[in-house]
Amino acid sequence: MPDLQRFDARRDLDWEKAWKAFDEDGGLIVESFIDPELLARLQADFGPLIQRHEPGSTTEGLWTEFHGDVTKRITGLPTHSQAWVELLCDERYQAMGDRYLGPNEYWLNTGQLICIGPGETPQMLHRDELNWPHAMRQHEITVTAIFALTDFTEANGATVIAPGSNHWPGALPKVPEEATCRATMTAGSALLYSGKVIHGGGANVTTDQWRVGLHAGFCCGWLRSEENFQLTIPLEVARTLPARARLLLGFSSYSPEFGGRLGLVDYDDAARLLD
Ligand SMILES: O=C(O)CCC(=O)C(=O)O
Image (cartoon, rainbow, N blue to C red; front, side):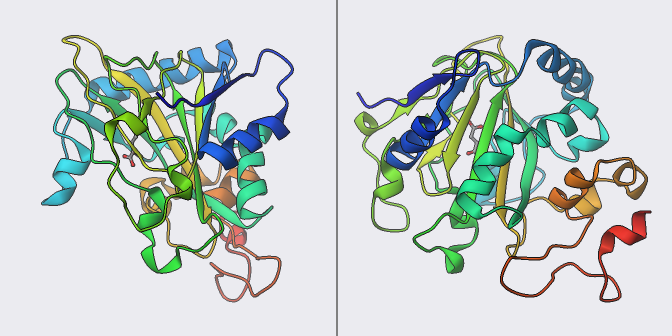
C-alpha cells in the first residue's frame, strides 16, 4: 500500500526533506503543525459557526455531489477567527507558496472549513489544478494545506490521496484503489499537497463523528481564486487585517516579479482604499 511521508513539527523538521517528499509523492503530512494554544482558539472560534451551518450544497448538478450532502462547507473565515488570520500568516505555511509559486507571486485560493459528517460518501477524486484547465503546465499553479481541526481517521473521512499521481499523465487518469492511501492525522496536523496530486474527501462511516478540516490553498496571483474574498469578507473586517493577510485575500494589489500590476484601483494599490 502506498503512503505519505510524515514529518513532525515538534522535532527538528528538515524542510528540504519535506519538500523532497512533496515533489516525489505530491504531498506529505506534518504532524502537530499548529501549536496547541492556536488549535484551541481555532476550534473555539469555529465551533459555533459549524453548529449553525447546514450540510449540503446550495449549488446544482455535479457540484451537489462534489460538495457532499452531509458535508458542511464554510467560507469567509477571517470574519470569524483572528486565529485563522494568524495561521494564514504562518511563515512555514507561506514557505510552501514561496517555494512552488514564487515569493509574492500567489494569493489564497480558498480558506474553507470542510466538515464531513456521519454517513457521507467519498468525494470524487480530482486534481485541484483542474480549476484552471487552460493554465495547467509543468510547474505548480496551486498548492494546498488541509489543517486537521479534529483527528482525521479512516472511519471519519480522512482525505483519500494517490501518492505519486502528481507525475501521472493525462488530465484525470483513473485511480485504482490500491494506489491510494488515507491522510490520517491528529488534530493540529497538516496535509500539504500539490495541485497535481489526485485526492478527495473520504467517506465518513461513523454514526457520530464530524471530521473538520480547514482547507486552504494558494494559487498563482494571475489566476481567479475559487473563493471571492472581496464578497465573503466585509470591508470593515478587511481593514483590521495585517498587510500580509490583506494581500493574500486580494485586498491589496499584486505585482508579479516580471510583469505589470494586477488588482489596481485608479492605477494604484487597492490597499489605499482601506487606509
Ligand atoms: O476534505 C477533504 O479531505 C478534501 C476536499 C477537497 O479536496 C475539495 O473539496 O476540493
